[in-house]
Amino acid sequence: MEKTINLKGITWNHSRGLLPMVATAQRFSELYPNVNITWEKRSLQQFADFSIQELAERFDLLVIDHPWAGFAAKTKSIVPLDLYLSEAYLKDQEENAVGQSYESYCYDEHLWALPIDAATPVAASRPDLLAEKGLQLPKSFEDLLALADKGLVAFAGIPIDVLMNFYTLCCSLGEDPCQNDDEVVSTETGVKVLKMYRELASKMDKENFNRNPIQVYEAMTLSDEIAYCPFAYGYSNYSRNGYARKVLHFHDMISLDGKTNLRSTLGGTGLAISAKCEAIDFAAKYVEFVGSPSCQSTLFFESGGQPGHLSAWKNEEVNRQSQNYFLNTLPSLQNAFLRPRYHGSMYFQDHAGDLVRDYLMNGGGEIEVLTTINKIYQKSKSLVVS
Image 1 (cartoon, helix red, strand yellow):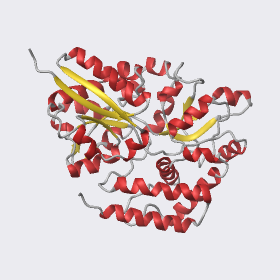
Image 2 (tube, helix red, strand yellow):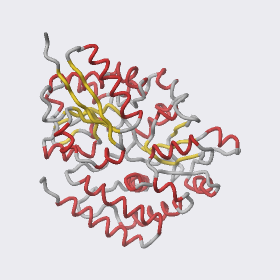
Image 3 (cartoon, helix red, strand yellow):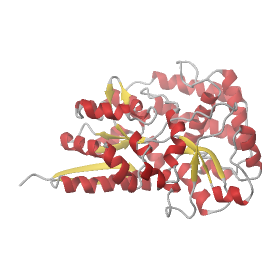
Image 4 (cartoon, one colour):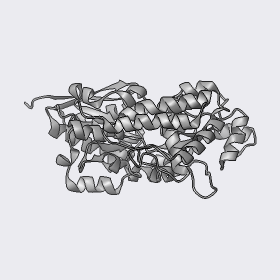
């Protein structure tokens, strides 16, 4: 009789985060009866904040965020997947990456997680509300401000999302942030972005500054007060019939110059294996199964997942079930900015968003905000592995 192998996994607390992992684990155990995989969940904020080094002590499989790649490479808390997955499999994954999703988990010449889930901030709407009020989707920043004046706009305003959207506006004005060791962005661009962002934020309900993307979408679907969200990490669940009270449609974002759309900041999740795992070969077989094109387009998606393989994003049935969520937002994914992944980047991400959020809510001096952000950035660059 074969020895039973028990693997424990940790993911984040949403239908998109938990249910596809449970479904794939169940199917995998049917294919490999001696392997039992159980999944636990943690909050979205813990998902962004909690050290993967600590989680890797307790769990065999981890669903992680790509900014942890540099930390993983330094601490060796998770294993390089390129040592366990075939060259042909990884070539397919790389060639069928959604935007820079595959690259986002590559660091120091190794792949630290497999991009099983792809996401970036996109626009969301309640088409029924817009039609009822005789309104069109905004195309420009001026259109967005006009819609916000009617009290119909919301965006995710907790610190991490505020920082990601700060990046988006910088990129969209032609300057990618964090390209040198001294400043996040030039003073000229930074001041312009903060002023634009504050103008929009001043028209928002203050409650939005307590909402992550999930909470924005819940507010959009549970009530009939918010018709449009200009940028928040997309969740295809809300575009599927029966998931929420009302169906959301998702879109590429507005344009600042009338030519190109806003360039958002890549998100998504990857599946990683702890260096403490005692059955890495079986864990790798599970990772391979979850990321396979066939699983991604069927079981993974149908269980609430948001695939990371391009074939699923272009799949006709996947799009039919999601109001064309994937085809409509694919341009945003393909164009998304890959945020910093160096070892200290999580320290910067954890602290800089508070400053931008405070400015959006209360105003203040743009130069002072940028100066303080740069100090945090410089400190993050000097952090060493503990």
